[in-house]
Amino acid sequence: MYRHQLLKTFSLFLLFVTFSVTAQEHAEEHSPEGRDIKTEIKEYISHHLLDSYDFSLFSYTNDAGEHIYVGAPLPVILWDGGLQVFSSSKFHHGETVAEVDGNYYKVFHNKIYKTDAEGTITLDDHHHPTNTKPLDFSITKNVAVIFLVGLFMFFMFSRMAKSYKTNNLMPKGMGRLLEPIIMYIRDDIAIPNIGEKKYKKYMSYLLTVFFFVWIINLLGLTPLGVNVTNNIAVTLALALITYLLTTFTANKNYWKHIFWMPGVPVPMKFILAPIELLGTIIKPFSLMIRLYANITAGHIVLMSIIGLMFIFKSWIGSPLSFGLAFALALLELLVAALQAYIFTMLSALYFGMAVEEHDDH
Amino acid sequence: MDKLIEQFSLGLFVWQLVLFIGLVLLLKKFAWGPILNSVSEREDGIKDALDQAENARKEMQNLNADNERILKEARAERDTLLKEAREMKETIISEAKEEAQIQANKVVEQAQATIQSEKQAAISDLKNQVAELSISIAEKVVRGELSDQKKQTKLVEDLLKEVTIS
Image (tube, rainbow over all chains, first blue to last red; front, side, top):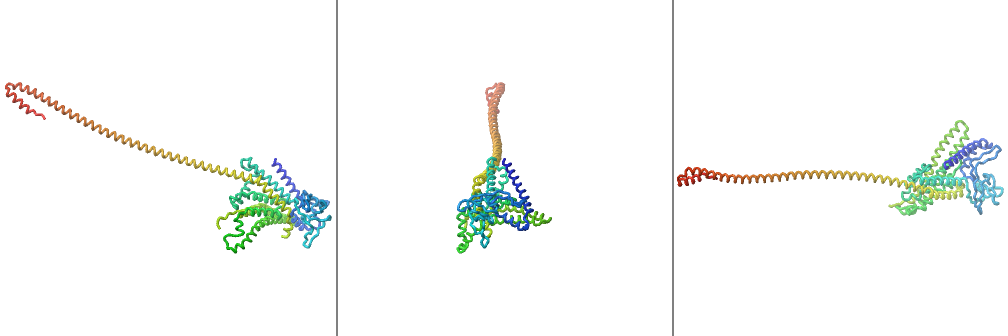
């Protein structure tokens, strides 16, 4: 029964993929006259890297010249002197002003601003809007993807956990594939870095972060236009959890090594303290930037090379860029797993530093 | 960097934080906990089984060693028993020999004593017989010579002197 459902979902997914490919071709043919294809590709890439208020899989311009979007609207949740919840379909993909209970909102550069009925956005000298920005807790495309991935992970792993009970402590089906990965994280990431005694309390976080980042990175490589880990907000949240876990589970030795480094002369201790203190913040900061930058760079380069196919419309250029894109896509598959591994590994390393026991000094 | 800060979405950050922490807690309760427990339980089971097998092997070795030892002991005991038996046999034989010797000596002694006494008896018997014979001879001689009493007595005395048998 379950397998049947999975198959259905998968075929639906394949359908979407083929749709999106054909739609893109369609859009190319009917691109408005006078627009440079290079700028179009550039805009497309930068648009892809941003979050959006609706789950649009692809868009195209029909024969009548209308822009048609395929996808689903998502709820917009704003705090503007009171909770405002409305569907993102009111924005019409950023083209119109949404009116909710006498307030007007408009999307400008992917952010929601409060405007008047005409939707005027006033800009300052640096081209920043001066309109007020309501607190925005909308279920954006990324939030929806995070939620779906969470749901998927919950069903996959709780099902795996159940299979142990019914199958004499042996995993079944998907679990056979996942168990070695879980064991790898336990035996080769958590235990060597944190230590046999204390690794257990960090396991849930390490396992969740590994699979979460990996699955999300892989989803980013599908043509669904999902891009979660190249949002600094997402990587910041992950890095912040690592930082907080490190800080709040750290033992006396950890703090002693930061504020009063043993084994160095007293003046050095005063110099080392701020450096060490800064180091505790730099470590999770590097986690945040590394994941963000790697995935963003991967997306930009991959999409640029795919875009090259449309620029070189010659018999040699397009196959060449196709080959390049193919090779790069394979590399990105590796990067997706590698970044998840590095994030988990470094988190474990920081936890290990926090709970390390120093016997001598 | 400016662009990065400008793009930063507080909503996404909050959602990610909340959803992710929720996911960690949910998975901890329903997935990671049971999975890791099951795995460690299984590993312990395998370890126990291996330990047991090792123990059984050691026990087996001990048993074999015991058997060997017992066999050796039995062999040694048999050897000592045999040795003892041999010694006993030898002593019995030698004792018997000695006994026999003594017995034989005794017998020989007795025989000798008997012979001696028999000899003595025979001698005395012979003496008696000789005496009788002498007497009878003497009688016969005497009868012939017994014409003269004086001569008779003298003859007897002479004869008796002659017949001195030690």
